[in-house]
Image 1 (cartoon, rainbow, N blue to C red):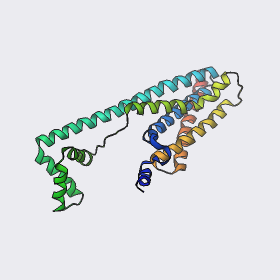
Image 2 (cartoon, rainbow, N blue to C red):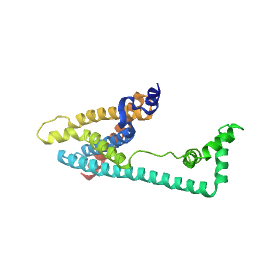
Image 3 (cartoon, helix red, strand yellow):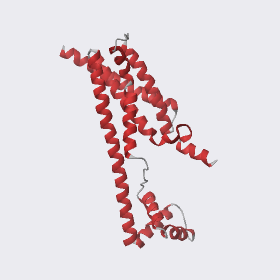
Image 4 (tube, one colour):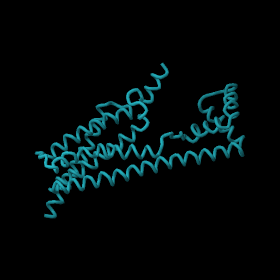
Length: 242
């Protein structure tokens, strides 16, 4: 019964241990597919050759993917450093200002609706253990919860997802380049990208615990809008230049 309840809250029933990094995979995939498809759409709108589309697409894929993964890594690392800094401050305050910190614990539980004599018992139990005391202060006073996810794995999942999902809009152009003739390349690229958006939208709904259809439609609409804008910008610039 307990494991079932934990699965409901954590979402681990279907995705297992990788659930912890599913959000990074989803957002990396969304960014990878949207930006790469936008580059492809803009290049097609500008009437560029197949080889140029591939070059621009892969340049975006690796440059943006690496940049996004580095950003995700640095953000996660900074979050951990901030947590540890605040935790050290709380330990110092407990050592040097114990009465003030004890009153803060009392105020926290008064706000939660606790009254005497239970209130004093709770305060005594919490403050008799410094680690427990600091944990409560971090969570209830500062609103900070430790992120146990590895910054390296956050960056890695973001980068891998960006590459895998971001490759979808380019796939048709790549196989066409190797003498596998494909008619209506942009149409096929659009359809395959829509399938990628659908998968990512589904996974997004699992991360946010929202409606599956809402997640899919939201991703399709945003990705499609970015592609339409890029296509017409490319077409407009191509007409001006030529």
